[in-house]
Length: 390
Image (cartoon, rainbow, N blue to C red; front, side):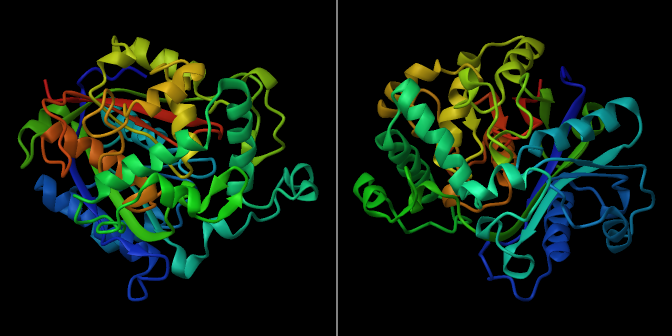
């Protein structure tokens, strides 16, 4: 889990971001290739020099197709993190780092591409799977319905509320107003707008739910030594890993049979403790955070699980404006999945790199350490800590 300044992110890239169905001229593979090529231009690396590929969430852009399309000289590493949603975001980065540090590959592209307009909407319903018998008979057909149960439990046990969720949505939308890539730019949001938006699955309103996008994002991972000689200031991977708490099972996307004492959490308690111990820092050292925000309650879960604030202190912490750009813990500074684009979190990793380079549209002054969390509630989930190059 500890990397300790031996592997670096040397380049970042994104496709154009579009609303669901807005990329009729680009396939999912095409969007992924756009993002990887953009990361190569950013780093000053020829696409042919990539020799590793890492993704997650059953990305359909197969390594063989990318290998051929980019004209890669060699393909030495290819990996995919299992699991739903963006839980594997930082797990894919961990695989890339492991490949570089062990010498399996020299330049690994970590990517995720989504083209919901052509492949189907993630929010439209779950396909029957191994746990369907434990969910479908009870009306749990959609991700938002599953997330709503955990949110309601967090309200009951820890005192969070719809006001907590509204502040998260409003804070992230405010960040999007300065982001030229954000799909919700020029569409400011107030708490009253959140309350007035239609109920999707009680207690979650429309504005508690992420965007539905056609988009892709990528980063390039290489050795620290090589990164120093490339075009952009590298960002070091300080610590990164995956984890699952005991007894979690399939979690909220399965039978909801997690242990009751952590049912409202995000399955990252163990991971959080181990991650910060490996990095040799504490949560209060983090300058900027990028939390997976497919639904606003996921930010609530991450704040508690990773130790930024106790679960029973989240409501007060958020209400005080802590997540705002000028708050104690600036979060999702590009707008995140709620207001920039939904790429299963890959854009959150890109934004963390921008912050540590000093290039964000909502730059946090003197940012040196960034936290990035993958999607909570699934198993395994993942997270990582990045640092400005030492």
